[in-house]
Image: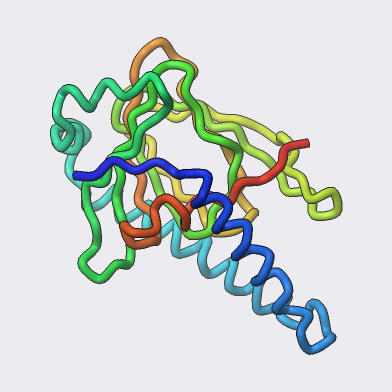
Length: 198
């Protein structure tokens, strides 16, 4: 079992990659040439993420069995911030499963995703804040929120269609299971797509 946290180097590497990839569409002098493909692929990936969430509901053990994967000492989290524990890596490197432990008051940064993600709350409650991407201002704007309770399962497609921040606003430790469409070596750098907030 491994514990992983994103580092400043991971975030810097992501920023460099985004700068390079952002120029490819204009190489032939026809910006927007791939816009229809991008929209179609985004819809397909969103549908895939929903199917992953359905698969989680249909095939994973109950919350108590999943929580038992963490020794008692790890279930209390860390005062330094929420902690991710790798509990399963697909042998074909198609996805990785993490248990995340959230102490009261801990929350993620506002982010979209570089890959699809699906999660289930196993213990406690998580507050999810939603944001809408303003392409003209290149910022995310708040647009809603919801509380996720134990048993809730949700999927998130890659890209900026679903920007959110998760956090534990309760007085109890919360634990959630997250499955990401990356291999274990890229959990720190290949999942979150950090954005500025208006």
